[in-house]
Image 1 (cartoon, rainbow, N blue to C red):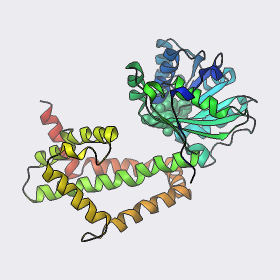
Image 2 (image 1 turned 90 degrees about the vertical axis):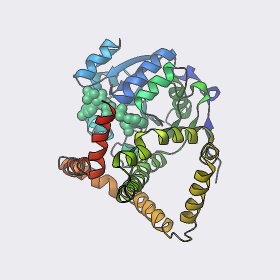
Image 3 (image 1 turned 135 degrees about the vertical axis):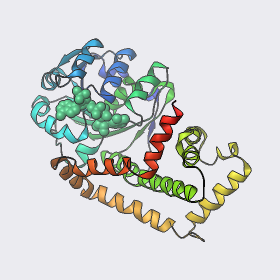
Image 4 (image 1 turned 90 degrees about the horizontal axis):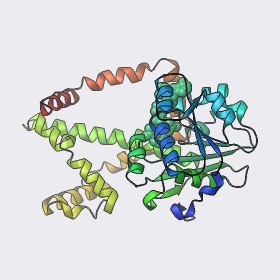
Length: 340
Ligand code: NDP
């Protein structure tokens, strides 16, 4: 296996985008933050915004950007940063973007989805790259304002110019990712899609199932529901633990817990991972593998496309179901009491 390529601020050269026009298509979570960061970082590129004519259009104007229809922005741009939701991207691309992708232009995604599932097939004479922050839009802006960066994934699908990776690195730097020597990791579009979706479709469900089981067993054993929820996520202690894991690592942060806690955490995790006494890890891993398979073979993408076509019926039903589950109802009631 070849060594993963990591890039830092020193590896990114802004001169490759100097004098270029960058169109931010979609002034939402990522779009607004990336546009403001690029302008503040003064990378020599001119930033314009392409959006539908609604509140975000006005917001971009209030922020001082020139705003155009998506089609007009892409016509004017050398580099198009596609920052609209993945589910609408292919339609908007066909109707407003494709015709403006002349030779030498750069199409940059923040997610691998549309390319992985061939929803968008760009012309061969443009660069197709991905610069995907591993951070929400709000934090992308806040970190930059505070002089810090955020990790991103980088990928190159098409290198028509011969400079696609350099351009991707320059964009990563221009959006503030490499500030504070934060890292950019090279992956493929397919790997970004798999890893991103697998977090959502395997990791989160397992965490939510474990969360629910812990809540139910606490309450069945007489723990007040409010206390059970506090022990779960409402105190914010876990959020702090996760921050420490990001800083020093999963095991290295353990000494900050009591020794009873350290012993309990490590022995029971070991029992799960080794399938000794608690033979569930095989099943957990099999669940994760099944979700990975469905992501890789396109089954999830087909299921999601059908869900969109049928008006998000399942999504709406599940929101209703979960919002009315005993744990979530109690959680909302507790939050209201906490805010009194
Ligand atoms: P948002 O949901 O914030 O939407 C972005 C923009 O798309 C908004 O300006 C919105 O307009 C516009 N938009 C919505 N529907 C349409 C449409 N039918 N036609 C034209 N424009 C439309 O997106 P995000 O910023 O969350 O995501 C953008 C990209 O970044 C995606 O590829 C996503 O996967 C990726 N990404 C997102 C991250 C995140 O934390 N959110 C992290 C990393 C990558 P309006 O506001 O006017 O409705």
